[in-house]
Picture (cartoon, helix red, strand yellow):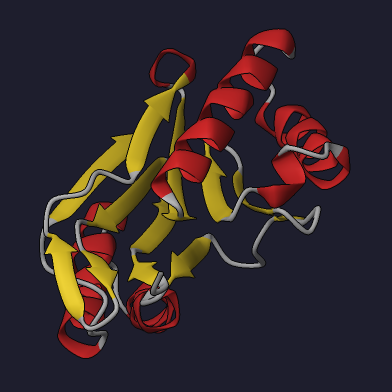
Length: 178
């Protein structure tokens, strides 16, 4: 089977607001097979936003595991992310999952991967997926050189990524928390 390419997920935090957006495109080989996929979820009673790139089933399974960790560790995102990354790396089943995640709350923004990575960016801008580099570059330029709020930075950077990356469209799901 051909490899599925999809997703641009972008997170920005500014002035107490954290915003994460994901596009809706899923591509199989050279064909777009879905325009409105939802790759962003709100967890922990609206206190955590998560976006994933990679296999939908794997991404959703990881979100479910993260939510279990958030419940276990009373909403502590960093502790939950570290524990999930340890499980993801060590568990025979989880190790086979192919997805990357961004998880954010009002204070933290983290990239989680199956390699055991839990990375907090130097600046509050983070992106993953096929168009992630385009979205991150645009968002960093806007973050550093304008006074736009987090939502506007995300909207504009995602538009730019969608204009450049053939695996990214203009159907965005955007969630924010304060």
